[in-house]
Length: 120
Length: 106
Image (cartoon, rainbow over all chains, first blue to last red; front, side, top):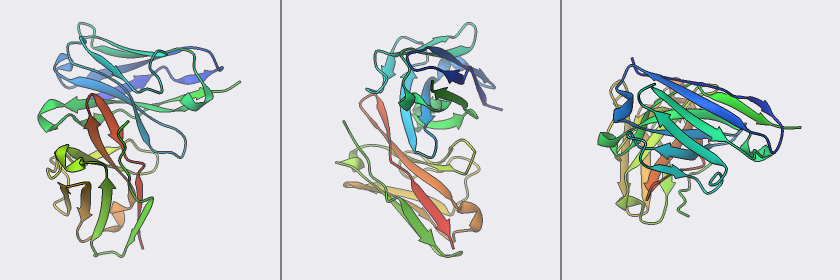
């Protein structure tokens, strides 16, 4: 069974940093691109960042470019999102999601999400 | 930046057909997928590559995409289909989500 489990969320002050992790299981991690997608309370889905299976290429939404860094360690089966200079508008549930190339890079599996709250 | 637009809400009677649209410039040139999200749960993929259903998704869910509009159609809508629905496409290397449509089954 494919599973993705996020961790690392919590309360952080504006300007602070937080590192999210995503632990995959049930599939060959290195064969899949993974993205982070967030959802602010009561709002819609917003794509944040993505990384290809090899880790060689990364992509970011304009809203987080220069502040967030996505990375992966395929030998350790881990995915991370380093979030710096956090703002109140970054408050959201953060999901990691697997993208399947054969299905046009649709997100076929999602974690349960981890809540990030940016507040003083 | 590329944008896709959905109606905020759609209502349907049980057993009837619900149609949810997603509009964007030349959207028909891109692959569109659709996600269902129920309260407190992560999204679930219901349609990918415009028209394809993942295993386990009921046949009453179907999709189309042409011109500037993609449509998710739910035939014989059931109470369990009440949820938020999001369309999504890729623009270069950026995933773009619609604002979501709340489907109410009255």
